[in-house]
Length: 185
Ligand code: HEM
Ligand code: HEM
Image 1 (tube, protein in one colour):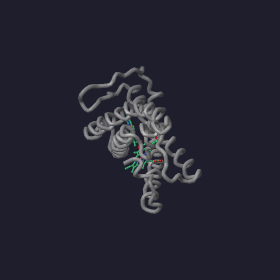
Image 2: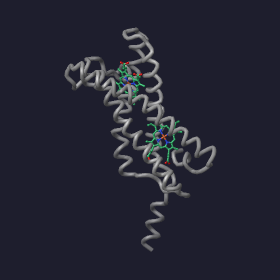
Image 3: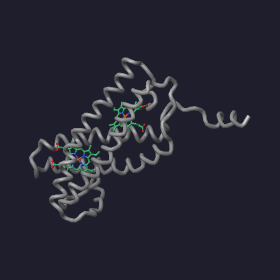
Image 4: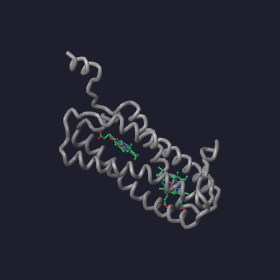
């Protein structure tokens, strides 16, 4: 009786919660745009107006990602992940968890090192021209350079892991034709 009541009040969910899906897709859009803009800016000569303008948008997107990841981690800890209708093998689940863990690490590392790169060299931390984030760092060129280097290598790791993530989703959808993509839709 009691277990039937619990089952009725909490039906098994095979999809991530609405809030988790909203944050996933918002962050996907923001991060892909930040990666593309950052890469493009790296080919522009320092100091040119176009680079300054695009870098300001890049920083604004990156700081938005930082706010969202602070929200996302507790949401993930509380909601966990949905059940499977047909559970993939242990190897596939372990691979997916490893890649997701790396994506979480990069989602923290990239905005934090970006903030340090700009903040410790005394550059602005704008947010879409509406306000500037407080800079809590002292001027420290060496720290800025070190953070910039981590940001640079982090970016290329991000491209690689994200490529793997997208290839895995495509493989599940097009070859395996399983439930993976629908869990996030
Ligand atoms: C268009 C691009 C994207 C598609 C189609 C996509 C698709 C998916 C799908 C289907 C899942 C669920 C996997 C499962 O059920 O095990 C997922 C999970 C996840 N995605 Fe994406 N994704 C995209 C972009 C991104 C981006 C840019 C990031 C940024 C880092 C990202 C980070 C994650 C993470 C961390 C998870 C694990 C969620 C969790 O269990 O907490 N995704 N994605
Ligand atoms: C999800 C967050 C972020 C991602 C994915 C990201 C990605 C990138 C990428 C791909 C580059 C080009 C890397 C290179 O070729 O060297 C870059 C450069 C840069 N990013 Fe970010 N970034 C993020 C957040 C931030 C934030 C929050 C800031 C500052 C507030 C920032 C500041 C910079 C700066 C100043 C550069 C230029 C470095 C240089 O060329 O000297 N980034 N970023």
